[in-house]
Length: 264
Length: 203
View 1 (cartoon, chains in turn yellow, blue):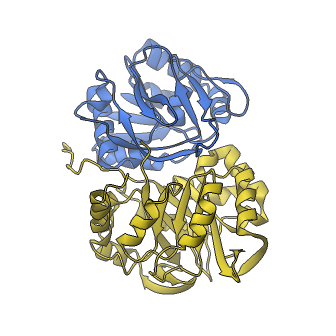
View 2 (cartoon, chains in turn red, orange):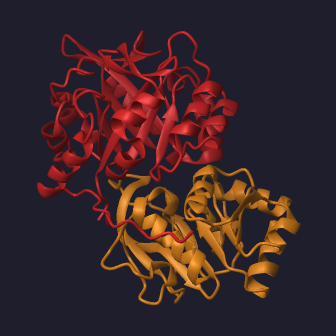
């Protein structure tokens, strides 16, 4: 049976991993900090996937970001999705060459659909994850691009239909209002739109503890839950959450934890 | 041991190379050079993306005839991964009908049921063939990471291990020295490491 996934998202900003709250970024630490506080290669064994987003506001250099990805993915044997600020095939290729298995796109989905089509023609639709940021205002879900700064002329439902026609691989649905709050996902919206999406749906924004992850995973149409909360899941937070989720009987992968013997 | 990962510009080969190095393969080379391929102990054919484009690049580099000579005639171990596995089959309709390398009797088609989420993404359980060397030491139905919109089906005995997503499809096959897996062992945690270790040691 196809398993559901637990995804950790890392938000990268000018050399640092950050905690985002409603898209306001707070620096937390660099790659060394992440290694020290998360023991990353170890913790990766409790994740189904890793998403790394370049949210750099001042220097959005894809090549610097790609170099960081290369270091980050060393000895991490899980799928890596990376993106942020990709505007050309060359920039996407740079990420693939440095260890990304898929790329996450946002602004270009709306501004440059030709680039998206070209990416899909080259790398297949399963390689393109569509990041969708929305805010709720007077009961309407408004879609934003450019790191949450620019509102577009389609509402969430219209935009999801548009993305389906583009034939992107997956939807990464992020509520800006819930982002970083730790209060739980935007379940009202998720319940409302999940059935209308024929692509794998990753929900993000608001998870603060394993109960939120469980609540998200219990929704039939949700394929994966993501959290970018560096504080709430620090240390053994993620492995512990995974254990509780497995114990609750949810359908997620249960790997053989035995270390394999490697002869030198 | 020298393992060559065929480089023909289709997707992320970095993670396969780093997995092999982690498994202490002394010599891991990413290349499409004919001489380097001839002098390898084993070959991995990776691939992500379009079947049509991949076959075009393989033919342009004359890798189709070389791989036939090395693996079908001379029996050098060959493992296809994801699209690389599909290319070892007979045909695919992705971007128009295209013939594959034709080393095994399997045909590729798109997941097409209405209401089914496509692509098929995530960990899914594989039912290994009892004879499969790749799955040596596995018990039950281990989880591996899949991400694909097309899958291989075969009516013939290609020693297939299967996965179920809207019906069973070929998750892996082994015909003598030629094997393929639809999933990504390099992204499948300990299970993937174990499977690749089997390819290194048992083929």
